[in-house]
Length: 508
Image (cartoon, rainbow, N blue to C red):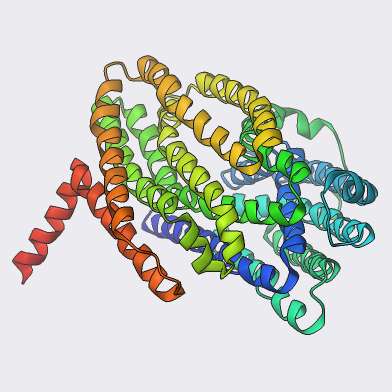
C-alpha cells in the first residue's frame, strides 16, 4: 500500500512539474519568436495555437476514453483480448480523424491565407505553405493523443512527463537556432515543428506499444465497430463538456483571427496567453480538492465538505486575485519588461488587463462546479455552460467587429461577472442551502475589494521608469503588497501565516 501511495505521489509531482515547465518555456520564449520572425509571422504562431485548440474538438473525448479503458484493463475489468480489440478500434478512429484534420487544413491552406487571415507584408503563397505544414502537424499531434492515453491509463506518468518535457524543449527551444542560423521565415518555423511532430509520433508509438502485453500469435485483431459501442456514452459525455469549454475559451480568438491584422493578432494572443497563467496557477488546487470533496461527500461528511470548499475558495481568491489585480494595474510595464517592445506593450496592455480580470473571476467562479462534481450531478453545469456559450458567441462577434480585441476583452470579463453574480447563487441554493451569503461576503468579496484598493493605492505611488530591471522589481513589490493584503483579510490564510510565524518565533 505504501508503494502505491509513493507511486501516486511521484506521478502527481512529475505531472505538475512537467506541466509547469512546458507552460513556462512556452510563454517565456515567445518574445524571441517575435524578435526574429517579426510581429506578422508571429501572428501565424498564434494562429497555429488556435488551430490546435479547435481541432481538438475532433478528439470527441476519445483520449480520456483510451486512458480510462487502459486503467480498467490494468484493474482486471477487461480481458487482454477485449482490451487489445478496443485499442485497435480506437486507434483506427484516431487515424481517420487525424487524416481528415490534416487533409482539411492542407487543402484549405490557400483559402485561409487569402480569405481569412489579414496579411499585410507576408505573401499569400508563403502563408499558405506555412498553413499546409500546420495541417500535417495538427494531424500528427492528434494521433499522439491516442498513445498518450495508453501511457496515462497505464500510470506511466513519470515516463510521459519526461517525454512531454523533452518534446516541448525540442519544439520551443530547438527552433530558436533554426530561426537564428538558417531562416526566420514562417515556412522554416513550421517545417521544423512538422519534423518534431513526426519524431514525437514515432517515439510515443514505440513507448506505448512497449507497455502493452503481447497477444498470442493465433489471436490476430482487426478493426471492428463492436468494441466501441460500450464506451461511446462515456466518450460523448466527455466530448460535450470539452467542446463547450473550447467554444467558451476559443470563440473570441477565432473571431479576432479574421478581424485583426495578423501582426495585431499576435499581440492579442500574447496578452491572452499571459493572462492564462492565472488558470495554470490555480489548477493544481482544484485538481487536489476535487477527489477529496468526492470522498467527503461519499462519507456523508457535509460539514467537512463545506469547510474544504470555503477554505479552498479563500486560497484561490488570494492567489488568483493577486495575479489578476497585479496584471491589471501593471499590464503595460509587464509586457514591455517581458518583450522589450513599447508599441506592442501599449497596444496589448488593455487586452491583458481585461483578460486577467476575467480569468481571475473565472478561477473563483469555477468553485460551484467542484461542488456539483462532488455531488455527482453536473446537469446545472452543462446548462450553465451552454447558456454561457450562446451568450458569448454573438456578443463577442459584435464587440470584436465594432471595438476589436478590447471589445472581446470586455465581453470576456463581463460575462464571467454575470456568471459570478447571477448564476452561482442558483447553484449554491440547490447544492448547499444557506451557504451563499457566507461564501460571497466572507470568503470572496472582502478579499477582492481590499486587494483592489491596495492595487489602486500602489498604482498612485509607483512611478514606472524606462528600465526593465527596475520595472521588474517595482512589479514584484506591487504584487507582494497585493498578496499581503489578501492574506491579511482572508481568515484562512491569515491564521495559517500566524501559525507559521509563531512556530518560527518559538523555534528561534
